[in-house]
Image (cartoon, rainbow, N blue to C red; front, side):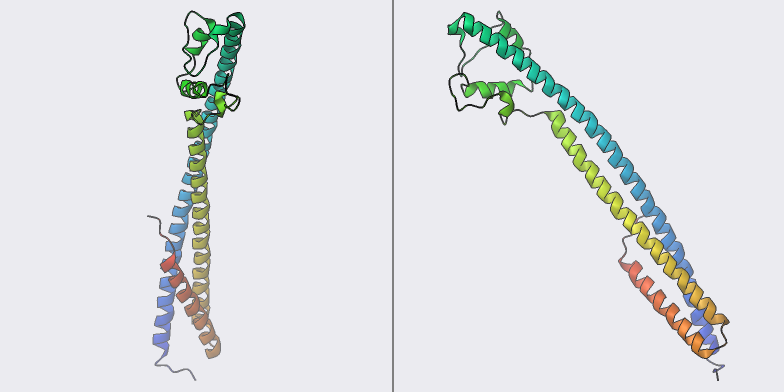
Length: 224
């Protein structure tokens, strides 16, 4: 027979478990919503970074095309001048002559392109067969827009990783809320049952699930 003196304590235990489960469910739902917000913000930031990366890549591509076209035009003009006057053949100390077409074109290279051209000319490419074929093979040839594009792509990847982690955390909190709901179910069924074995089984299940959820929540990251 059920001990009447122990029933109030048992009912208090059930009430306490149900109260904790209700609070835990609310907290898990709150945290799930917060992490969903982090996920949305991070995906939005990743999308914005990718859009900016695309714009920077377009700028870099346009600058590279300008450099190639201007270098080709300069090289053709310089070649024509060398053919007409072999003494105009440049070496490592090339100086643009503004009165020549090549000098005119050289002085209109993009400022970021000139260091690469200068470094390339210093290798004496018209005399040294081992010199790089073009300034584009020089380590000095760097496009700021291209570097910015790569940085933005990496930022987009970081934001996407943050979003994926936030999504997983949100799912974890949802799963915890579901288990808390099972605690409420088991505790509620136990309070209605008249069979002692069933009561003890359901109470044990509710207590085990509650303890597991509380311990799990203690290790979950919290978004404030």
